[in-house]
Length: 138
Image (cartoon, rainbow, N blue to C red):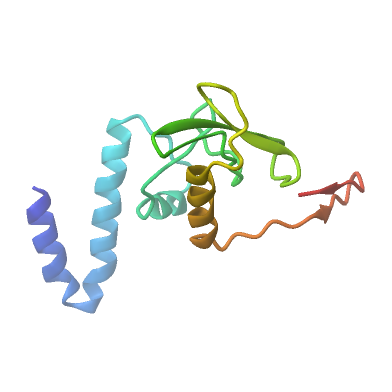
């Protein structure tokens, strides 16, 4: 069935007027698959964005409530680590080995993994003043 859909999609996509039809069919099949897995979708734009996601992180209720994610665990060099901290503040927190609890901020495996993460990311962290409280936050 999937291969037939792809064949029809490619045939129809050769005609520019058929592109909206192909997108609609693809999204409806994706939505029906998600309904079978009991996924709650409130906005169609969210479904379109999920098409390019390879990892989906959610909170304990199973919903994506805010676009802010922080790392709490990592696994590198065959060792598991706990990451402690407060929100996005880079001045607070540490990385420790899960098995011994020792500080692992200077471990070569940890530093190389974090370096590769930094080099592959274009995210910036800046301090801003909260308009309601006047407090500076990361």
